[in-house]
Image 1: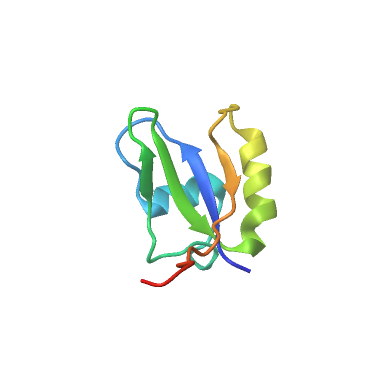
Image 2: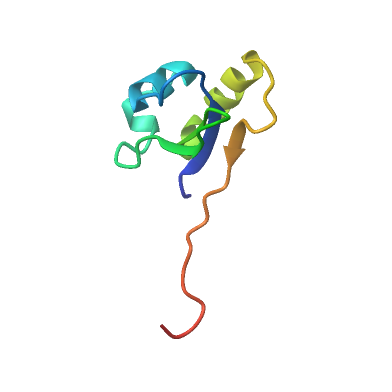
Length: 86
């Protein structure tokens, strides 16, 4: 199964991957180290990290403990491929 996108809100400067891991109690093996942290909306303080499918339950529990934010959550990350000739 493909990694999933975890979008979360963070106040302040762009968080490091380590900070993202800390916020959700994740180990280095539960995230995509090479993807790092991607900014999705800098004004709203929204960022994405990729998590392994096995970490979903842990992340959902941590999300439930955070103040509700409509843009936070776990989202699919389907592979994008060409549908026709180049």
